[in-house]
Image (cartoon, rainbow, N blue to C red):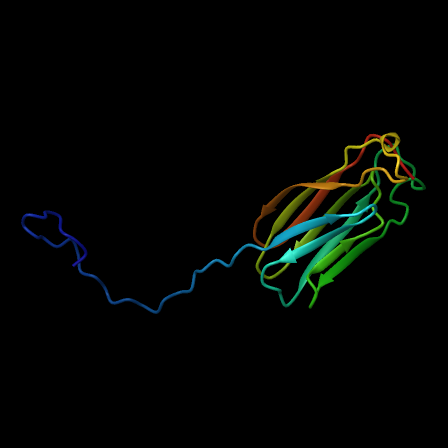
Length: 155
């Protein structure tokens, strides 16, 4: 009996039906991408269960009013794979560039936002500031990484 409509009288609201085979609805622990920032690269470290495969797609898009020579001159799309290793390196960063990266694995969708906000004149170490991660949102099947350009075109 599922319960009583009237606890005093003990009337039954319905009979418990025979259970069918259980369905596994467990949700795995979310994968996390951690960033390690260097002068001209970002290493994304994937923690969590290592997938049979996971892919990151990166594309640099040219900024308005910037020449091809100063920004995104390579015009290449790169595809990176996590296989046995769980570290993904983004290299050859262009600080004024906008990049979209999608991280695909069988279990997870993640979104990272990377933002550049320094002017090249403010940086005396030879490189302007590169993007830093400001947010990480775990979803279900893809990681989209986006960071935004600084105000000036830089070589």
